[in-house]
Each structure stands twice: as C-alpha cells, then as structure tokens.
Amino acid sequence: MSQKPEYNFDVIVIGGGASGMMAAGRCAELNKKVLMIEKNRELGKKLKITGGGRCNITNAEYDTRVLLKNYGAAEQFLYSPFAQFGVKESFDFFEKRGLPLVIQARKRAFPQTEKALDVFRVLEKNLKNGRITIKTNSPVTKILKNGNKITGIKVAGEKKEIYTAHSYILATGGASHPETGSTGDGFNWLRDLGHNVKSPTEAIVPLSVEDAWIKSLSGISIPCMKITFYVDGVKKFSKTGKLLFTHFGLSGPLILNCAQKVGDLLHTGSVTAKIDIFPDLDESKLEKKILKVFDENKNKMFKNILGEIVPDGTTKAILSLLKNAKSPDTKVHSVTKETRKNLIATLKALPASITGLMGFDRAVIADGGVDLAEIDMKTMRSKIFENLFITGDLLHIQRQSGGFSLQICWTTGYIAGSNA
Ligand SMILES: Cc1cc2nc3c(=O)[nH]c(=O)nc-3n(C[C@H](O)[C@H](O)[C@H](O)COP(=O)(O)OP(=O)(O)OC[C@H]3O[C@@H](n4cnc5c(N)ncnc54)[C@H](O)[C@@H]3O)c2cc1C
Picture 1 (cartoon, rainbow, N blue to C red):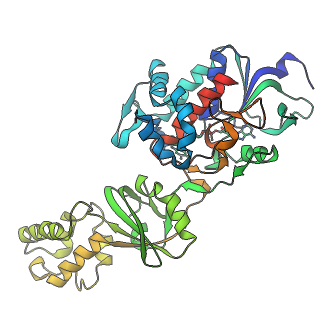
Picture 2 (cartoon, rainbow, N blue to C red; picture 1 turned 90 degrees about the horizontal axis):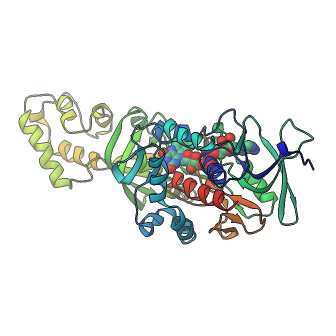
C-alpha cells in the first residue's frame, strides 16, 4: 500500500455532490487533511439543477417533530442527527456565508437570488481552505477492506496507486438523473461490503398517461387542483396542490408527491385518476359561477366564453372532453341544462389513465439505500465498518419534494464531516 503523503489523507470523501461537499468542508474546518474525489469533471452537477435551477435548499419548518413527519418510516432515526444540525443550522450555515434565503409557499426555502449555482458557490468556497485536495474526473472503481475497516480506494486509470485515509465518507448519491453522475455505484459497493441496501425505485417522479387532452396542455401549470386516484375503478386517495401538464403526462409538486403511492397502486391494477380543477367550489357554487358568466354573455358563442370559466389555455382541451356538447358554436342562451350539468361534472372530474411512472432519468429522487438501522445516526458511521461514514441519497429515507432531500444532505454531510 502506498505511503506517499500525496496518497495518504485523514479523510477521503467519495462523491462531490451536495452531501459530499458539505462533509468535506466540515472536515477541513476541523483541520483534517481531506481528499475529495469525484468522477465528473465538475463538482455538484446535480445540485446545480435542483429546483429547476432555483434550488429548494431546505424546508423552513423549524419544529423538528413536524418536519420529521415528512420522512416516513425514517422519522424515528432522524431525531438525533437533526438535533445536531437541523433546518436552523442550515439557514445559519448559508446565510453566514453570504447567501440570504427566502421562504416561499409550503415553507420551501430558496436562495434569495433563486440560483442553485449560488448555493454551489457557497459550498465550493467552503472547500477552498488549503486542507482539501480535489480530484475530479476520477471515478472510484474499488473500495478495499480488511476486517471491519476500509483500507483504501482505487481510481480508474491509476492501476497501481491506492489512496488511503483514516476515515472514508461515502457520498456517491442515489440513482436518479444518472447523467449527473449518480449511477448507483455506492449502492453496489455497500451491498458488497455486507450492508443491507434497498434497491432504488423512482420516488419523486412524474406520471405518464395515455390521454391526448393532457399532452395537448403541455407546459400549462395550475396552482391548485385536486387529483383522486382509482384502481380498477375503486377510489384510493386524493391530494391537492400545483399540477403541471407535460408532453408525456402529469408533473408538478402535486404529482411528484403522489408518485410513490401511485407506484405501489400500479402493481395492483389499472390506475386511473380524476382531476378536479375547482377543488374549492362544490358543484352548486361552481354552477353559480358558470351561470354568472353565462348571464353576462348570453349572445356569445359557448366556446368563446368557456375561457372565462376554465384556467388559461385549457379551453380547447376541455371542449374536447365535453360529452353532448353538440356544437361548441351554440350561443350561450341556447346551452341546455344538460350541457351545463355535463360541463360541471367534467370540470370536477377530468379523466386520466395512468400508464406508469417516468424512469430514473426524470426522477427527482430515487428511494432505496442503506437501511438506517445499520448506521449510527449520531455520527453517520456504518455499524459494520468503523471508519466508514455514509451520507445523502445513499441512505434509505423516503421524502417528499419541498427541500427535504437537500436538508438530509446538509444534516448527514455535516455530521459525517464532524465525526470522520
Ligand atoms: C432534477 C432534480 C431536482 C432536484 N431538486 C431538489 C430541490 O430543489 N430540493 C431538494 O431538497 N432536493 C432536490 N433534488 C434532490 C437532491 O438533488 C439530492 O437529494 C441531492 O443532490 C443528493 O446529494 P448527494 O450528495 O447524496 O448525491 P449527489 O448530489 O447525487 O452527488 C453524488 C456525487 O458522487 C459522484 N459519484 C458517483 N459515483 C462515483 C464514483 N464511482 N467515483 C467518484 N464519484 C462518484 C457523482 O458524480 C456525484 O457528483 C433534486 C434532484 C433532481 C434530480
């Protein structure tokens, strides 16, 4: 094994994404000699596209008990790490480094500049303290072990040299958006090392549909809609929120947050959905709204005034769904009660046939990862290997969209960095 100082470190951090950068910065702050090793040419490739380039950096829920409800079965494991470095500490970390954060709907926190690149720059600057060697374009190919210790790593193209350290932080991410570098390497190594790793499934991911009317609305988003899912015609669950129509189906926070459950439903039968575009109005209130528009436009054509009732850009698609709307050229004063009732029924239950979840390439996160029972959550240390620490998307933690994933990276990265 090479003993040359350029191959020997206090800590090696494998993976230069959100959690790895946080961890490496913390190690260096504690005066450790650190090697950060990344397979891409650049660090933080995924971080730079988070939140559509705006980076939903965390969720400003300061009550840890309430916050941790968003992590499903992982909740019980997260009290200890969040007591050390939680949402408040994340706010302080970024704001003290010159990045003010703002809080938007559903407590989602963003950098005031709304640029993910600015979040990356804070972490990048934090790495520049002279104690960290950054090696990019260097895929790690092998992790070496002896007994219950990791003894070194090998890097592609460097057949002879072995990089060694006192401690190793594994931060290679999950399996979503593999073009960013997260190709699931860490899952394979951890499995080989004897850890119990749940296979990833796409977790926060859009839905594909077969309905032409949905695809025709590609690009339109509506702030508040209710969607109800059915299996073989039997109602399963409903959720309300912002929905985005795309050229392949349905997306937006509402859908991303339903995806995990819908993924399960797809295994049990044929999944359909009904979308209510007026969740705040019951049928009689919606009828009043429609009658008011009709009264004000008696002599206009039905198809020309529908736009005053339905969300912008959706008129044509909704007309295509109306049963018995014999002629959309009908004057409003001639619209029958039957057509009016049919319009109400349609607006409260637009149909969708769900054909599947979009794949890993469109997933915001893929779940799966190391069973938390195998990690000492106070330190993020593996319970199998005494000098191995595991962070971020490598951990099996289910979560919704809303800043909850990156918060896991800040928390686990900081704690691994403090203890490695
Ligand atoms: C499109 C999209 C938008 C998102 N938006 C948000 C958001 O707004 N808010 C939020 O909270 N979460 C968001 N997420 C989730 C969030 O980005 C991830 O949870 C987070 O990036 C995970 O960080 P990580 O450090 O675990 O791994 P990653 O950021 O995936 O980093 C892992 C790094 O390890 C490197 N690597 C992998 N294998 C090797 C190897 N063999 N050798 C060396 N290096 C290796 C990779 O190249 C990569 O750079 C989004 C995800 C996606 C895909």
